[in-house]
Length: 617
Image (cartoon, rainbow, N blue to C red; front, side):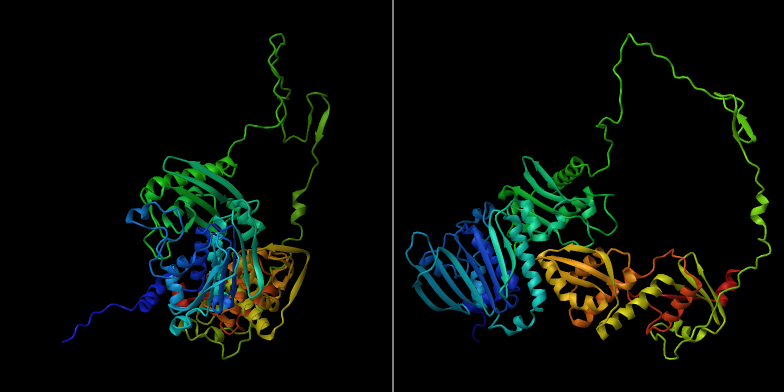
């Protein structure tokens, strides 16, 4: 029997390794941009087409490579940063394993142009599927140009599982932001399909954050800095009023490398304890500068998970640093004793006689007497007029008690929800002349054959609006209410791309939105039901929901828009409705395709049977 264990060919081994290192186009950009940073580049340009499927090009002005180094860089585990195992605990660079380039050229067509400053000619290498197609000297500028074409061209299964261009572009922007924020001293640019998304000059950390994530954060960033023998913590935290439901603008960096760390996130949340609205999270951009010997970055292929030697001590330091920042900038409520001239306290002079204040009052004063004398004048100080309180009740007893509101609810026989047998007969339970009324500004009560029916007015209105908005989108027409003073909304480049994707369907719902700058939009009109409400939280929630959703498709996006707008525009609990409003709402509810459940899945109708009522009495 022959032996069955054998070594994998290098090309196959590289493809397997690429499955861990290169998961999507964003992974390629991350690895190549990190290499450019390690090469000492001061300007890095990223050019992509079709969200990285067709082309990913990284151009930098770093130190470049010699002809031998350029060829060796594509070999697996070839690196200039590691010579012994001890070097793993003294890393000051981004890449060190030597897996990225070998993995990239195993699943794509790669072209490399590079030249050092001291060389007259550069080197050109063309590779495809780990095979060198061509290598020759060329004339090129100082630095390196990587061109990655047709990603996963030789692995159709991997290419098939890539998401839509919009989703892949969002992942690219996420990785780009994680690198560009922490290196403000490097100029970056990003171009997609010949359209410039970012042009970031050299700047401070705060200005870089604003340039990437929008001007809305400019007045909401608080400086944080603390230095200990263990580490140095610096960066910014957002004010509590800038907290949002989404958790996108939350960044931890360790020695210039982005990381995820749920344990340290809890420390930040603890510092904001009792200062945030429910279900919201603060923005933060926190940098740790620590001795590399006290951390281990070699535990995950993407190097986003890092182990710390003294996590508990760092947790306490981080908590104190964030609390100190919030207190220093008067975010935490306190008592301010530095008042400017609000109290004039005279200087004590021993020669000045101090007299006790005199109180002048009338000991015979009786407020229930018709008139009394003033202590100072001795005259008639006030004369209380006689008032006949019985006049207020004249004619009151002669008024008739209002009759119960009558309403006739007509329903289609086919409207029923087979998902819940308890409510199958709600459409046929109503008869003309049934009495109903509003309870606590929250429920509408109606008598039905089997008992007493409760209708949640907020959820009912949400269901009505939801189906109306879906109809508007389907028919490509919606009612818009123009607002007197248009509102401006500043978005990040990532959110701006999502807005462009949603803008057409938002117009059908009733939003009148146009572009007012690079990443700024002007809202000129809102849906008719949202008149008088601020539309900015609704749009931010819609963008956040679209960003976090793993589902795509035109119908899903349209339903998400209709749900978000209907939830915001639905009448709130506690609103007192008139008889006509109650009648219209009940009629509209039972004309919906699904009148038993709100669009978010919560029940609208509940019936208290006659047996249950008798059992309680």
